[in-house]
Length: 429
Ligand code: LLP
Image (cartoon, rainbow, N blue to C red):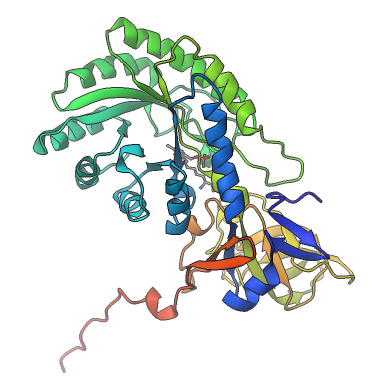
């Protein structure tokens, strides 16, 4: 089996390794559950995106802005910042994180439908590259915030091109029915309005249609619609300096999924923009940079055979990786050590008190109690969406570099979990 994330995640003599380190060593040193990332995989993914962009005449001078929400660990942000990446943020918290990780504020774009006035002020003070604005009310709030600081806020409108990305409904964003963006038909009038606001500077057009796209066609359809918009804006004398094509490129979770290569996805889009060499391209990939660069390492607590089903009860749960419970998404689950023992079919479940607490269903595994398992393709929206449900401390995170393991987030202590809580005083009697 060719594992998602290979060659950085591969078996050697029956033992699963991350780069040159056996996962069993990581479990022994840091415990489980534990997120494990490969530095080489992370950097190769970003480099591939940057190279695909730079290889095209339209991509020269473009910027890959990593979508921080996919995995916001400081060590990963810092790695990407050192490689020249920009960042796509969606909150004041993410702004503070990327700045703490050494990001250049001038390479940060700010997305999201609900930016608060405080978040806008923080981003203006930091001097970000662009606000991706999603409504008229937000334009007005941003204009006022910039006025208070005596600045001009750089803006793109996030337009909703009404294309169906053909992905899970919870992660589709480019349809008319979505809360995201402004309808593309309304965009020219709204751009005129933005251009007249005293404290805004129109700089770009932005679009993001959804996540985990395995078919490049919807991206292409979206660009066709953006081209019509660019013409309409030019006719109104509104100059556009950059085009932000969002993120959304999928990864392989299952053996039978074949997401496009990065250049196969990008080159045809850039080809459509020929003749517009002055336009800078911004991309906001999240999942594609980190998803297959990480896994969740977990230990089997118990095997529980049943009349209808066998359960493998593990020490990771829906609070650690909620994608299966939330989207019924599939993550490959494999043995860390391949043993010559009889296999069986298991539902792989956690200790949380919910029937939705499964990480995989009907999986063929050859395991015994106490064995280690790896839940693959968990680098994106894994740790970032984890919670403390059932008062479970969040997992540790480890970044492997060759044969070295760096702890990049220590496992939470139980006391961390209630550190912000207080009891009320005793009743006076
Ligand atoms: N840009 C914007 C404006 C976004 O909303 C997103 C993701 C991205 C970029 C990055 O998309 P990516 O390249 O990662 O597909 N929690 C879900 C995914 C939610 C995606 C939300 N927006 C999951 O686990 O599948």
